[in-house]
Amino acid sequence: MTYSYPGEKYYPKGLRWDAPIARGTLPGLLADAARDYGARTAIEFRGKPISFIELQGRADAAAASFMRAGYGRDATIALFLGNTPDHPVNFFGALKAGARLVHLSPLDGEIALSHKLKDSGARVLVTSNLAALLPMALKFFDKGLLDKLIVCEDDDWGAIGTQQLPLPDNSKIVTFRNFTADAKPLSEWPNISPDDVALLQYTGGTTGLPKGAMLSHGNLTSAVSIYNVWAEPSRAERNRIERVICTLPLFHIYALTVILLGRISVGDTISLHQRFDVTSVLDDIEEKKATVFPGVPTMWIAIAADPSLETRDLSSLAVAGSGGAPLPVEVARLFERKTGLKLKSGWGMTETCSPGTGHPAEGPDKPGSIGLALPGIELDVVSLEDPSQVLGIGETGEIRIKGPNVTKGYWNRQQETAEAFVGDRFLTGDIGYMDEDGYFYLVDRKKDMIISGGFNVYPQMIEQAIYTHPSVQEVIVIGVKDAYRGEAAKAFITLRKGAEPFTIDDLRAFLTGKLGKHELPAAVEFLSELPRTPVGKLSRHALRDQLAMPTLDQQQTASGGRP
Image 1 (cartoon, rainbow, N blue to C red):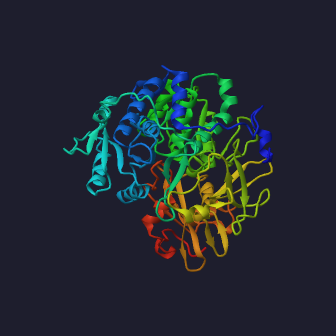
Image 2 (image 1 turned 90 degrees about the vertical axis):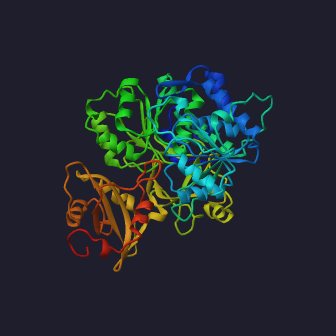
Image 3 (image 1 turned 135 degrees about the horizontal axis):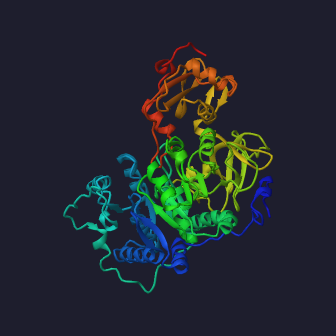
């Protein structure tokens, strides 16, 4: 073993950091699952089961149709879909045809989506006839960004009163039903390599325009294998087919890898929800005995605050995980007090196909930690000034990562790719440290760091402290201009139901002792709602866009002079 760190001693019994990590192709992953699990339910949607065999058959029909239309090798196909089985059918189908994919988020605006289409080179788009999707897709077509628009009909999966729109009369716009009507099985499929790019997964664009991380078949299958190796001891102990709730959007890397690909690979059943709804999730657990629910912090905040939580029977739930963003410690504590279940968060990125760290079933209780480096993944912490200088235990710097799941770089961005790597190690942009037990902690994102009066101030640390206030529902802290310090921290807060606003002086008094003097926020503002990313994470970037970086003097909303 060439990599060693103290956290390995807390790995599940018999598991080593250098356990073999499988690497293959995504069509191969689905074919293996269809062979092994056959008629077992792969996806349940709107109460109807879709077996592994049926899923592969539909994907094969899509693949044959893409190839017949000339969208195979070297083609890039965009998916503009929500959480319906249309996504996995076209995802696996396009990949089996040899094409590359790009995910478009239904919650993005026209400017960002148009950029992703142009940048990726996708001239074919698969969407739905739902009113929430089709009008935007037709805009792309009318702007000349597409050669072909393939439209899935939502009522193929059973109508539930969703508004569906008719298609314009144009030979280049076709329903998925007609597109695949003449699909016949092929005797020979394209030869796909693990090194081939499977997916251009665009980052959020928090520093300039979004850029596409090139994720290969090998990256994504390695990511699935890393999670499977990590979870195997606990899976063997439970020895059951899991029912996994999927409310996370399938176009996001977390849901794609952790739920869709990961659970298909081991034969579990995915309970697919079109959107997150607290009542629907709790019903799935209580009535249908769901056993696994991966969520993001905002989902757990909503669930922890639900008044029915303490009266619900959640005994079937074996795994409650949080990812996508740092989990507030107070939210995890509240959830555990109400349910008895420990809620722990891991860490990963689009560029790592999701895996990075995780918590072992047994090990020290480390509130606020993102856990241990997962098998096959090397993590270290380097100086913010010199990313080739590795720091010691407890020292705060930028986290670097190396592993078979890490992107090969950014699509058509040679300079940004070069800047993101030190040798073969990817610079994550996350600031954190490792403790003596090998557990990692995130302090903040490098780009979100506030420099106030010469001190580094980390918004996430302030947010964690503010979450302990009994009146606070959600909070975002950002830096605002300040003539005296250069920057100062400002808190934007939504309140719990029935709670009253408080002054900046009240907040600073509450936080004194929890934070250093230089970390105390200089201003507070109460909002009815905080902006979110498409996956539901609170978004500092969107908040900054709304505010257009106002000065502290303009935005001071509470009593008190300069702190």
